[in-house]
Image (cartoon, rainbow, N blue to C red; front, side):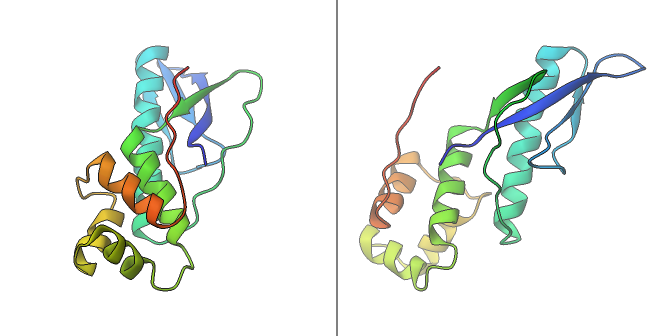
Length: 140
């Protein structure tokens, strides 16, 4: 699973740029210049993914970037929580399995899935491992 989404920057009439993401249509933002717009796009995509987790909605796979699009990655912890969320969707007893594997209360396991709850990367990594997944970090 990768959480790098293509976005389009369009010059706004009043100046700056408007940013849209065709995979996540609710992730719309703007910026004074291209750098600011891309930074704001990261936050808009993060908010869209967190909203989808909270509302138990699907998180679409990123499509391939088209000409004139820029690829934006979500913050690492958001990507890890999204991966954990997608791994547990439709899996009966996922929280119980995570709780047992991490030796924590089931309530704590639910907090690990909460996108607004601060969870250490190592904890999310162990939860992913309990579900048979491995987190791999790459740099570009």
